[in-house]
Amino acid sequence: MWKRLLRFGFRLLYNELAWTYDFVAWCVSLGKWNAWGQAALKYLRGPRVLELAHGPGHLLLTLKQAGHRPIGIDMSPYMSRQAARRLHRASVAIPLVRCRAQALPFRSACFDDAVASFPTEYIVDPQTLREVARVTGRDGRLVVVAGANLGGRGPLPRLIEHVYQITGQRDPVPRGDESTFGQSGWIVHTEHERIGNSTVLLAIGEKSTAETPRAQRSIGSDSASSAPRR
Image (tube, rainbow, N blue to C red; front, top):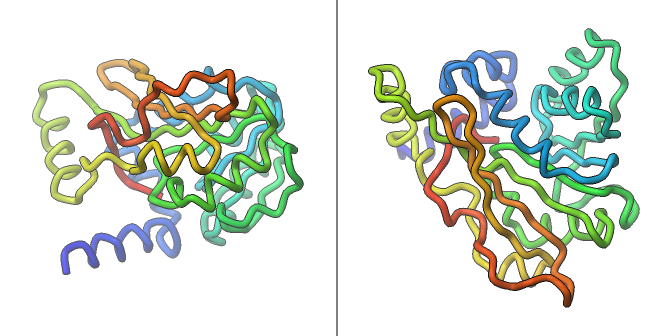
């Protein structure tokens, strides 16, 4: 019952209550949410970037300002409206597409990289991984901001950590094993980025070619996470 209530709450947060998403994200990260997402930028190599589950559009705007040519996809019409308003206020034009990550309406190899920040389990769906492998080029990357740990010993970080735990957000998300990624064309390793007192966990997927070493760890192998999830 508790898990059902949590799932329902997160669904509302990402849909009908999408207008509260930025406030909730700011609260549970002590204002670091957007900076956590931006940790992905240094791992993107090409200009053509696909953002999976773009949410309210903060990372899309940052990608554009950094010189990339992003396109965002999302299934939530509420989040699409939030992102469209943000881009309009910034006088920035970025294509937003409503679709599932498991069925991308793009031609093969039309992106250099793909990125997702704090995704739900869709990111380890084999069909998602195959589709992202299809639409990215031979040297394409999948960069996932998989989680973050606030750090600090004050009462507020401890309270937020407690909230993470009781809502199940300290489980390593997204999950997957090497066979799932390998069969879908990816080899994954993890990176950690320090942002103030916090630590961001990133999972970097590389195309599994004959020249790529196999000794890498999969997403979910480190115990960092954060909320809310998309």
